[in-house]
Length: 313
Image (cartoon, rainbow, N blue to C red):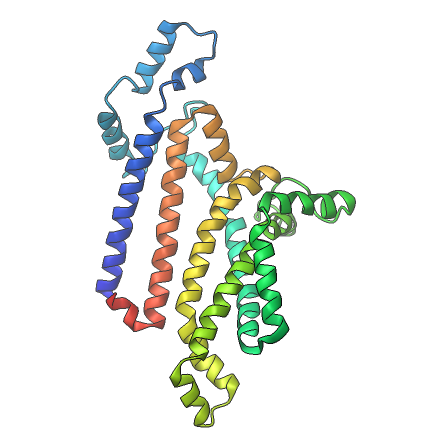
């Protein structure tokens, strides 16, 4: 298990290094107009050149990268070019907001999709066909369109939930929950249908295996076979699907946060992109890559615990 964990940690570190290096090269190679964006259109060419030197943009790109990397490994991600606020502080304020929304969405997706997927696989019939139709419809609907429909129906026409804004859980747990109901619903509708379809397929594959028929022939009840054997062997692909859902929900949060005016990572990403705030963008990239690596590591460890053969792969 230790060797398995070491391999996963090493691959995670390599992934972080590769992605941050590529992201830095892409972002900073297009940062030539950053000084002009900061000073405004009325600034003189001399002022723009002086600002570029102040930001270090006149240095070769590899020198800029190694300077950034040497500070980043100690937790110093620089300061915002527009607000002069440390990037680490920006992330500390925005990341919990996005994580609270995404984690809640993953939990809802996991519970509902597991119930629907297992039920469709075991019962079959009209429920199975209905799930397949709903999965296609749910996958085809853009989450921002679903968000707008939810706002119109449940915040404007019938004002049950707040249309915009975010309330920290420390301030009001009820307000936090109510503020996240519509965003989370918009995020999970398509994800539930897709995940349920994948879980259904995994359970059906296990149900068709010879050992399941053998267990039933020995007189074990269908419930016992399902709970003790089928679900355990169908869990690894289901966990993999949920890890992919987590990554997809992080991407979907960028749009959903704009629709509901939630001050999370999505809003920070879009604002930084429009402004050309390169240090803030790199901070977002680093935070999201680390999140993805952590989630994949947790899923790999869970799969290794459920299925010891996975540790040898």
